Every structure is written in structure tokens, then in C-alpha cells.
Image (cartoon, rainbow, N blue to C red; front, side):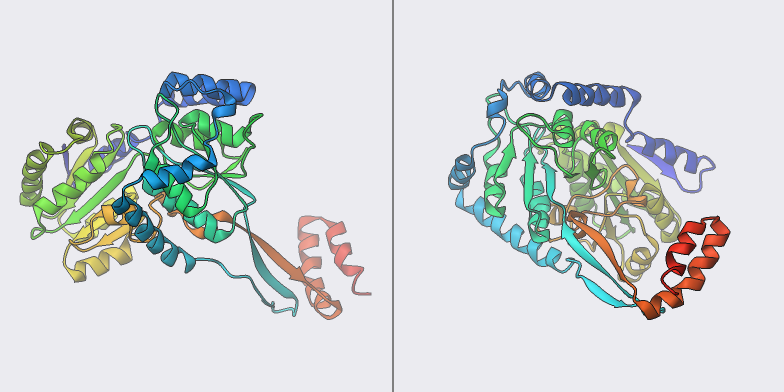
Length: 431
């Protein structure tokens, strides 16, 4: 753990340096670029090569796709309690995200012209579901459910396999529940390349969605332009803002919950007005870590990605949060302070309010998608929503009366921009 104090003269510089640790290194960028170029050039052959190199799976291109029957079989194999959990989480995600479905509209502008918007689902979307460190079953629901609500006609999923070429039952069962049938046992950077460029066996998609490792996140950044991407959701982050009355055991549990992802690139932050809280949380983390299955992975994050910040007031905590733009933000403060922080903090991916709202509820079942921007991308990206699976098109219709009202405006701009053909195209309709 590293400790910074807001009052330190070098605080801003030190905070910036800590945050930069989440950025892709030159080595990662170069490695990603090489893999993407190979996939672009060799297609299926490159995908098969990297599946064996990174996952140990010897897959021929004709075996990339998981048979549809295997999705249903995986759902049957899943224990009843886990199937029930999938259905419960799915219901919450559907209920939340249906409310965000944009609606077409039309109206009149000040010149009397008909204007409006329509929304159409993206034709073919690609979903990336991490499965290397741990199979992120919940990511299926947090992406595919939204694509289904949006009405995307083609949904392709890429997810890593094990050494035998098998995908985790939980992931396949979740895909079966949502109704996705096109699934490929390919993960990592090469999966992003396959979806972006297409191969002989896998058609390219129009937009890629989903979280991933630092390598996957960098791959999405590099293919943007050749294909759309949702955002840059990489290794997990959580920031907890706490006062002196917050329960240290709750805070420690929530920090460890994100640290256990264990890639070593995760970032966990504790921002508090109380030095005693920092000490108590540190003690609790040491105690709780001993009982975790993934304690070794979590320890890597604690060693390199844990920052505690002592502030004098919660207004300073808000400044820290707005700079970091954390993926997840938990508020362990009184209601008045929480209300102020929610108002002032404008860059967090998701805000969990109160001591009884751990990030894990948002990860699995609350309703909003857990696909959230990381690495300070929350300054300009928001969390995944149904609208991200739609294209918006503007509608404009002038008639004889309204085009005359628009003519003077167009004529003025045509003169200013020295585009006389623009002006003439409107003027000719007024005679």
C-alpha cells in the first residue's frame, strides 16, 4: 500500500504517477500490435496459433465455434441454484436497462421544418467475455442482455477456452439463457482482432463490447476506427471514500473483492478523512487476505495497486475522485456528505451508496451493466447501456414555407464560408 496526503506539495504529481501505472506499457502496445497485424494478415491460422500459444488449446478453425447444442447441455449441467442466480440477475438487468431504451421522436424546429431522431440496432455486434483468470459469467448477462433489448440481429461472442478447447459451463449456460447462439472459443488479443477484421470462418462485427485484461483493452483501442468499440474497460478499479465511523471490515472486504481479479493491473483506492480508518482497514485486509482462495493474486494488487489518500474534507475527496475517474465508487459516509459527493463527482463509472452496497452487488445483480470505463477513461466514457447498441439517425424534412425561412441563414453561412454552391442549393428552392 502507498499512502498520500492531499496536503503534500507533490500530491498531484504522485497521484498522476500512480494512475499512469494502469496505462498500457510500450511493451504491451507493441505486443498487441504484432498480434493484431498477424490476425489481419493470416486470419484463422493466426487465431489458431495464438489459441494454442496462450490458452494451450489446439483448435482447428472449423472447431472455433461452440456447437449450439453444447450451450443447452451446459445449462442442464449447471446446478439448480446457479441457474436460479442467472435468472434472477437477468431479470434485474432487463428491468433496469429497458428503461434506458431510446425512443424515436419528431417535432418542428423554429423554421417550421420537421425534425427528429430514429434509432436502429447495430447490425452485427461482438461481445468479449473474459475467461482466462476466472470465467466472468456475469459479463455475458451484462452485455448480451443489452444487445437483445436493443434488438441487434447478429450477436457474436468470443471467450477463451481451456486446454481442451472447452468453455466454462457457466458462460455457456448464461448465453443459452439470453438467447445467444454464435459463440467462439477464442479469447485474448486475437479474439479482438478476429472480431474487428473477420476471417474465413468468422465474419467481422460492426462494434466490439466487453471488458478484458490490459492487453484486451489495448487491442480494442488499436482496432477502433476499423470497428466501433464500447469504451475501454480494462483491469478492475474501486475507490472507497470513508469517514472515521466507517466499518473497517466492510471496507477491507470490498477492496479485496476487486483486488482478487489478480492480473496485477487492478487499482484500489481508499480516500478518507481519518488516519485511524486507514490503519484499521490495513489491519483488516491482512486478516481477511489469509482466508481468500486467490490471496496470492490479491497480494500482487495490494503490493503495487493499492493507494490510500488522507484528505481534510470530503470536497478534497471529490477532487481526487474526479481526477481518478474510478470504475466503481463506494461511499461510506453520512447522508449529507453522500449527497454532496454524488453531486460533485462527475466521472465515476458507478456509485454505490451506503455501507450495505458493496460493488459485488453491482457486478452481478443490481441491474446496471458492470462494463464500466477504467484507467481514467471515465472522464469521457460512461458505463455500458442499451443506447450503445443502437445507431441514432437524424431526420429532417423542409417544405416550401420552411425552406424560405431557412434560406437567409444558409445564405449568410455560404458567404462566410465561401461556399456559394451551398447557398445556391437552397436559394433555387425559393424562386
